[in-house]
Image (cartoon, rainbow, N blue to C red; front, top):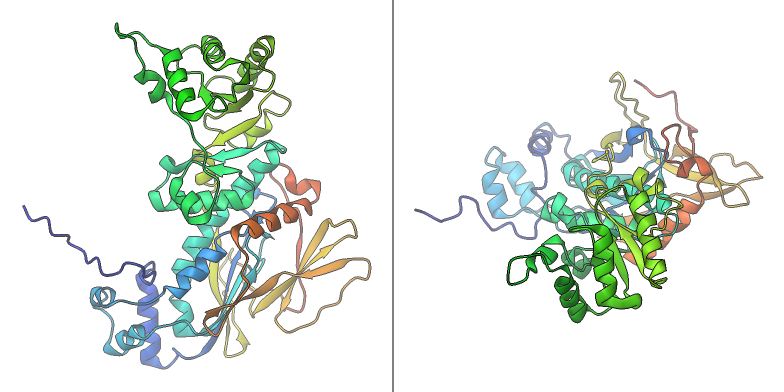
Length: 448
């Protein structure tokens, strides 16, 4: 049997083939008909919020910038794209993005039509970035938006991301990063911890408890708990619902004593069970032993546990899949050619032509009240009783990442501050109108 791989391994480190074929065919055609070098403006935005949510969270910007720096075509890739003309191949052999990119700060809130990212350059160099930009921003923003809602629902209680096994191995790492930006406290994913410096958290699964049986093959939960405590210390978290929860807590206290760090519950009616376990712990004098819950939690389940004696949450499937919205629904559209606004007229897909930027208006209390989207380089009237902030910042200039891009801790802090500017409607878990309305100033009526 021939074990030789059927694909080349010579593309390691390149992001250029995280793309769709039609981007390359458009590039080829543009080179042939002379339009490849036209100055263009492309824009990333969303027409609506998924599932009628009140706000979204920009995430993935740092990863986008990194992907653009690695957007180089290898010989193996170009050999695969054998449909390209010699002229297109030559162009791609020497490709390096040399344009300008502006965008919302990572961790910032966004709303329908917010110009999250604006890409300026020639048609040829901009059009082939579409898929890699959208695949990163759509996935990371979807996860961060879901995670932010969960953080609000948790009302100050910590949340651990533990969804690696519910998505592919690369998405697991980027999802962990997005949840941390949105306010999660730790991740179970070791690669994410190594790559991004996110605190790692984890103790044991049910298999650890099931492993421990006596010489007759009978379950020995106390032996499992003792082994874990001997290894990790008494401040560890013991999983108490492998068999009977009440007996599990009893065994945990017998082994760990009243200084046991925490118990975790992964099944049952978590509100009822957590109250019963809290009573059991308190009666034993384990007043400082915390209760951590997991079991397919989403923002609604977390909110439903307000008032219950739950000290922390472990969230997996729901957050890494966007809690019902696995994509943010962002698009990448050409909005300007050689200084002239261009716009689609497709039914149901409203587009505003021309390059844009945005101002966000705030009351003196710091609560955001609206977003004004206007043409690049055009001043717009400002109300004297409101404070305004420019939303877009330089990200890439002449193909190089602008110095001083924030690190993950700064991004995390930015998001926490941004979430506090929402009116209460924006924090609600119900569906409805967006928390902050967007208004277009200085544009003709949109085409549809």
